[in-house]
Image 1 (cartoon, rainbow, N blue to C red):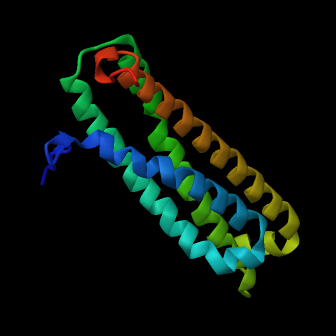
Image 2 (spheres, one colour):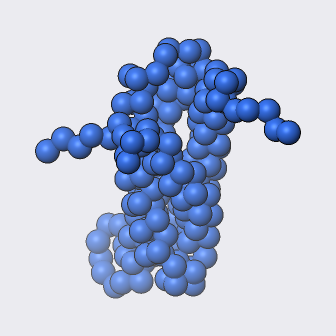
Length: 172
C-alpha cells in the first residue's frame, strides 16, 4: 500500500513532518547520552529514550519522504538542492542513534544477567571499557545527529525564506 506524503489537509506535508525530528532529535540525543552514561538513569528512562529513538527514526523517514514529494513540485533553486543533498545523511544517522540506544540497553541487560556467553564474559572481564566505549559512541552519534538536524533545518529554512522574498511581507 502506497501512502501519499505530498499533502496533508491541503498543505505540503513536509512542513508538518519536519517539526517532529526538530523537537525529538535534541530530546533523544540528550536522553541517549544520559542513558549511556548513567546506569541508574538507564533503568529509569531507558525505555522512554528507546521509544523516542524509534519515533525519531520513523518521523525522520516521513520528513524525508514528504520532502522528496515536495522537491518534485518546487522549482530547482540552489538552496533547495543544497537542502535536499544535506538531508541524505539524516536517515542513516538517526538509525545509528537508535542502534546506540538499543545496544546500550541490551548490554546493560546482559551485564546484569548471569551466564557464560562470550559477550557476557567480555562484559564481566572489562565492564568499564565496554561502558566507556558505548558512552563515547553514543555521545558522538548524538552530537552528529543534533548537528545534522540543525544544518539541514537551517538550509531548509533558507530555501523557503531566502528563495521566496515575496512569501513574507515586511513587518510594520
